[in-house]
Length: 139
Image (cartoon, rainbow, N blue to C red; front, side, top):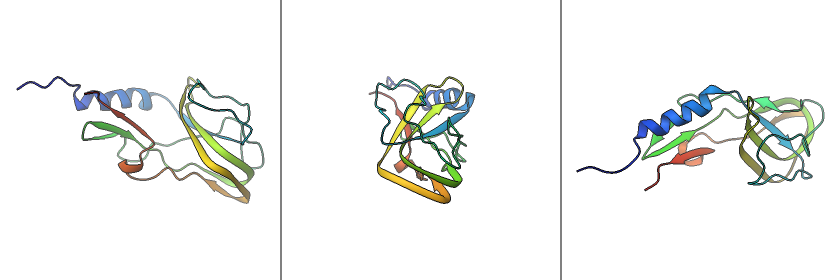
């Protein structure tokens, strides 16, 4: 029997090629930002400012063991980004390719979160169930 499909290894290689080649960053945004599916790349418009935050955000680290594949779906995780000694308010975030500026994911926190001289952390999850990025082969 022959099944027409894309091999699992291709999905992993695509993730490795895209996510292995560049430095990915996470930028924070206020409720004034206008970010949606048509946002092509990083923008400073509506970006957070305040103590402990640098324009452009910070570099992300791939979580150990990722990318990975399970059941025909490739998954990507990053270590939770943290801004120590932060004093600012954020409503959302953008994960983007630090080399090209291309937007990868937009996160809406559903409400404003404020840090005052403390660590501001985004919890990105730890399992494939809550993987931020995933790619599935078509049927």
